Length: 203
Image (cartoon, rainbow, N blue to C red; front, side, top):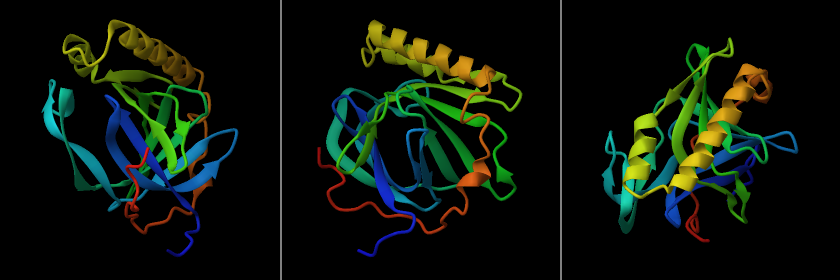
């Protein structure tokens, strides 16, 4: 396989002890400051299959995985994910035809773990939408309530998610990095979609 410039790496979300989804990303920065991963539209990944539930029917129920995966193409606009090492969230913005989305999507999740394939994390369901003026709104609170009621998340885990939410809100209000960043500084952004490599499911 030819060497990509910028190089690529695999980002996987882990849930209930198995891979929930996985996509290849371009690595725009990998430093003490942050890890910045770009996922262009059309990137092909894998998503776990099985019984799903919750308010919008998109979360895997406990024990619902059927052991399989389906190919999934990332549609819509490309997304840049910026992760500050040690934080329990990453910050996402989409690049539309009119430029970067004005808001940032703060995905609460387990601190990233570096693997031989790339990075692993775990989605914590609750998200925060950050506006440029430092205001914010919460997203998917009902799904977090369902996760606890269904036994997917323990009460202790929900407490950790809520603590991460408070820390993320403090960072938003303080306009901390990357909310104060010049996202164009990571340009140029490759347009070529990425395909997932063999061995993406190795642990």
